[in-house]
Length: 429
Image (cartoon, rainbow, N blue to C red; front, side, top):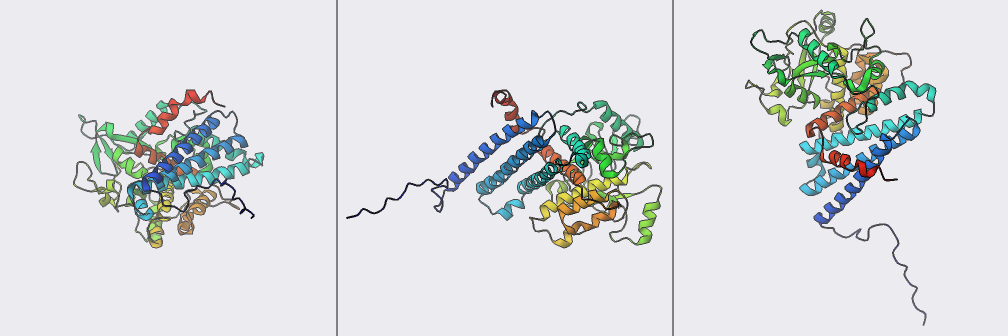
């Protein structure tokens, strides 16, 4: 009698437990191990980027590889959190922790797309040279992710000190009481101890002068000096205000009606001293429901209030508009996944058209955010045959990532482990 044919042994790489129920604890451990492996791969990818001696296609391929590992690790963290909390994806994403992970994931997704585009541009060195130069300046000076040194050296502390001193003087921030060292915060409308006041850049200083010029056309004074560390690109405010602004909880916009008439717009545009107001984007945030020291007013109640500048100096409108676009980008990230109505997403908080950013740069924002944000193009510097450019969007992504890292502190545990392992990695192939 013939024997039945032998069934070959299983050689598939697929898990033999597929189709079977797995305990939540075991599933969590599997995700944890997978994330550990991905983080190890990210460390090795980071080393390749750090050892790069030229910014050729190989460098950008390594940068893309690193970003994709970071993206995968973020997604695994999100899955682990959902497993641990035993909740639905929608409920988790609506939480503070979930929204933060969603923003990190969105930033990394966008970076991945931009690095892929950069690799494509490398095929034509003549056309992409200027773009590559800006990319190099941005990432070499970036404190997030790579920790690479700035090719121009570390940021000169004297520049920031002078920037702060200029803002204090031009914004007339000193208390009239000669015995007091307190400084005025125009957003909270109160004096704060000098140690609590920050000199903040509206367009991030680490993005560099080349990026700034590319995005705004020309960002230099009459002497050809960049406005990167000029008071025109800054606000002097309390740390509490800066934290909420960087988190996208509110924006500063022209003080006009929500649906202004042409006459109101013209009045604002031609005014010698332009006034601005606060618009709260996220009144439900925990920090926006806290009170403003030393008053009983809650932060969310600042919505619609005029920014209380002491003198006639104002930051330049185009840098406030860039910060506004960055806040809208952040808003679009969460709006794609949370229950935010299209009418809410399409709200126009900036009521005046103008010539703030190059049209190609704003096209980059709209491309990433969707046509619900077409109104951002009302702030465009018109160009002949504009070609979509992602540099302004890229700078905005970096701004969002910085704010997320600031919420976690200067350094997380994985960063410390990365430094501890650096000597050991030097001996690896």
